[in-house]
Length: 334
Picture 1: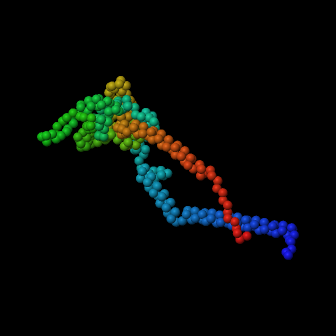
Picture 2: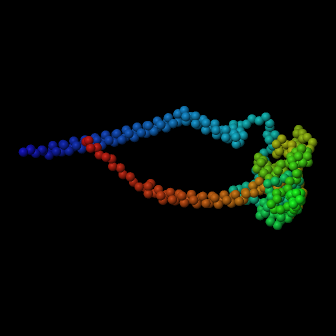
Picture 3: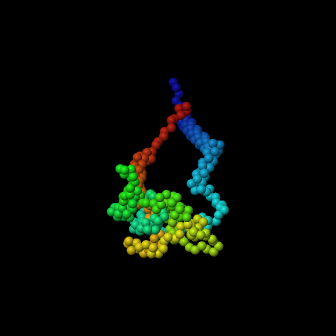
């Protein structure tokens, strides 16, 4: 018959078992910490090798060189490096001031009354030398003139058309589909009529000049007498806003040169402002419509962005707010 163990012996055996289980749990936790430490050190080593590898350095150098080359291609100068020129600032022309144009803001449109007056200035003053090849009579409809007014303006001009049934060219009145006529039949005739200088086409003159509308306005109103020490050869005129200062085009805008249909005083600055507004519209006929579409696009995409944020919060709220419990497996060896 087996003898009974005393109660103290049972208590000592249970204490020994508890200490063994505590030691095994501590050992398991230390092992997991070692694993996490080794994994974090391995990831940091990989990250360090990524930044110090030769391929990464070569890629960063090529990216920097490509960025500098692209910037130089776009703007013609190195970034953060001042340019050295043999010429002075006067040779590049005086920098124009920034004027508060009515269409300059993000939500502003053209002054269409000014466009109509500017077309009158172009037709009575500028059209004698400069062409406007990219603008047709129909482009004026709904912008500065009605369809009947534009049709009457077109019919005042004779266009060469043909051939007819006999194979001959003939003259006909203009139509809305015709483009504004050029003052010269070809480039040689234009140079011959302007002492060798070629008057540029004004269709894209605002975009083609640095400073845009500010430059053209300053040029039209900036004619002055040459300062002391500056010599201008015969047939040239001094304008500080023109590169070099000497320009073959003489001053063409004077006070009360024309009479506006709406009774606006025809001062030099008013005519320059109106014709520059007209030329700005000629360079960007889609300006007003583009801004309207931009506002609609901003409203639409803002609404879609708000909806996407709401859908994202709705879809992810269950996943981001749930709790995950992990029960590690027990060590059966102890």
